[in-house]
Amino acid sequence: MKPLEAIVDDVGDVLAEQDPRESEFGEIAESLSAHLVRLANIAIAAGDKDPQVYRLLQRAHTLHAETLPDGSRQGLGHLR
Image (cartoon, rainbow, N blue to C red; front, side):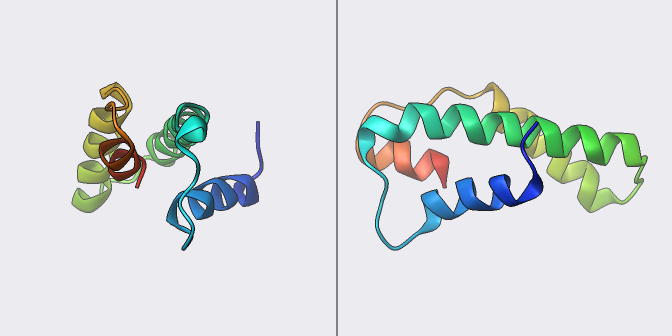
């Protein structure tokens, strides 16, 4: 399991001023997906009943189920 700093680093790779190479999109998508699952599991385990947390968990579930679109612009937009 990666530490929280690794999650922040991976997110930073996608949001940095310089876009990642398209050849890295698949690896980044897998990493971010794993992070998303981890964060969702933490939120669920915490038992938070906040409506915003519930909406974010629903969004996380939707994002996790989606596949990375073809094409650099759509793929990068999906990662972001």
